[in-house]
Length: 86
Image (tube, rainbow, N blue to C red; front, side, top):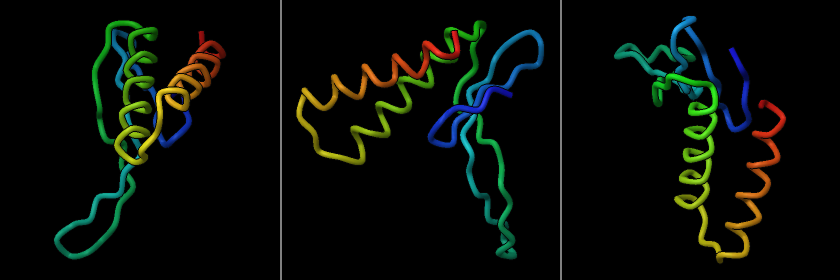
């Protein structure tokens, strides 16, 4: 598994890549279990990293009001982070 920031990761079965996010699942009895929630499926690691970038930006925009300058800075920071994995 490739561990990414913000609780995301990429797993592979040897043929494809799955973008996952850490989540807590609560059963009917109230028992909490940590799971890997499947976000999207990809044929390449590059595509999975792009999916990660899209999810992080969507999370950021949905949680904060921001101006375009801040969004562009966040995109640049994500590009630097992803470049490390390439």
